[in-house]
Length: 178
Image (tube, rainbow, N blue to C red; front, side, top):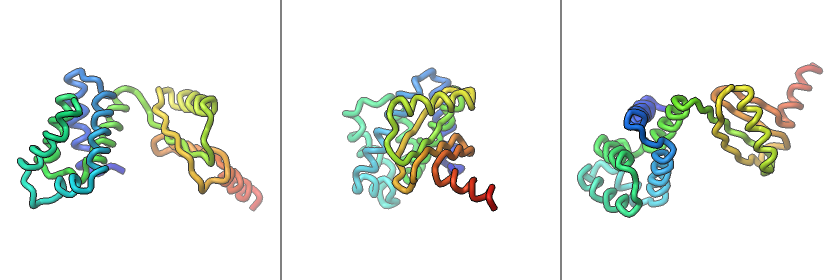
């Protein structure tokens, strides 16, 4: 669940990207690069979140860090706005909010698929086809393995969960027999 702040900043960035007719996927990719950079450095993260460091100093440091990356201007400006408003701690959730709103505006749905073992490309394509058929929208698929599963697949599309796991099937069988 996104916070109000993350939703607000994500919506503002989505509005800017859509109105400026900028490639949203490119902006999202650049934002994820910045997020990885910040998450990968304890010192940088601590400096951005510290109230003792002035926003001007934070901007100067981030400017030097971001310059070699060749990021789109909208991304640099967004990072600086986040710094100026002392919201660096919520940067990752703001990106999640932006991705969610951008997907809605582009008619995409995000599906998270968990499986007991790595799925083959054919299995992934089959699941994606079913998600597209059920939702009527193009799907952005996120696949991951879950060692806690016995077997099968669990797919989450928004707030709806499609449980095809062995555990889920056994639970349904137990309910029917009870």
